[in-house]
Image 1: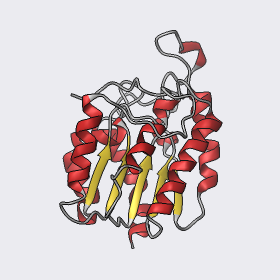
Image 2: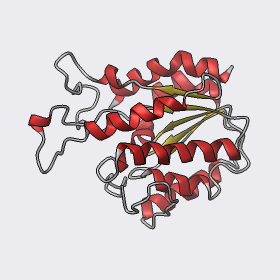
Image 3: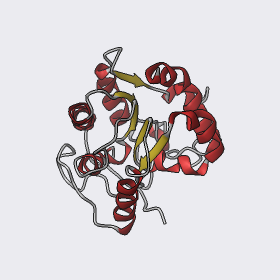
Length: 228
């Protein structure tokens, strides 16, 4: 069973690698270590539950990425520090993906500033470049999360968009037009009323199948160019 996205911010420093000890994390990590022995990976997806849930849209996954020898290394509940631990502990050893699609950070939003999140994601990018210098990185900006309006916020559903926007404003600066590209699809997930489109993100955090199609379509041309 997928763990809820509640593990963000267990460390004050989101840039410090942190191993999780829950069963979901341990099982996923072991699965990924086995996957890297099973054959080549052309495009590797790294992230949290938003990435992991591509498994719930298998036809889209195959349609958009099947030709690229894809692998999905998403873990529900992962914060940046957890993903950093994973890539330092075997999950990208011995593989040579052409492109890594990286989406991480929403689980740090409740406990870190936008600047801290951007710095930590930057460390992930730097680490990936150091370990896989020939791999290109397609960094996806943090998706919107509800509520979109301050007036709708409450104790159970706080307003986080200031943090998301602050982080994304720094992440776009990592785009060098070549080996690192940044894609922000946030505007495609928000309707004319300024709110997240319910058909795409019913819980205002996770995508469902129509949302994954929006993501795939937005990424299609850029990923194709980066894989070339």
